[in-house]
Image (cartoon, rainbow, N blue to C red; front, top):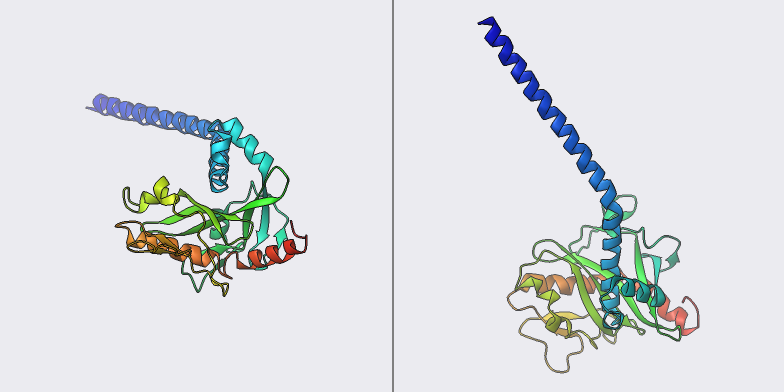
Length: 267
């Protein structure tokens, strides 16, 4: 009886030891893979970001789909600059290392919003803006990142503006969890084609751009067709745009940028 018990204990001990060794080996392999793949993941994330910014600038088609061509086009025409949202001033900082999502979770780098129409809860104190120049060196497009709630989660994207910082060139969403065939239609080229030429501000300087249920009327420069069957997502897009182009968002930057550039400064 004792021999059998000892053998069972020995077998159990060997099993536990084997499982422990396997777990340790697997943990080492996973950690090694994560470390090895990290640079590739970072590079892919940056390439995707650059691709979306070029799309928002109407430069993606000319750059082609080759990653090297995308990076070359981005580096040639796009200048990324940090701004302080509250003041609208350019500030020092590395736009490549800036992470809006991480900042928004950091109480020292963000602010909890009392008035929160975009449904983001906290807003980073800083942001990155992208100045896109033409071959002559003049700023032709300004691309501004946006984030706001959709139906299921936050939706991230970019708005490309003409030099007047009022006329829309494009609205490009890059990250969302909306329902395929409904809210996910923000990725549909036909819907994205409705945006060029639309105006964000009315004559009083208020951000009134909106998605219109049932379709925008002909000649409505502030209205874009809402997403069919996706009322909550459409409302989220409207609130997101009106928030980010108000004084809570890029309003101070837009005001100072336009004033400075009319006098040949702040470029």
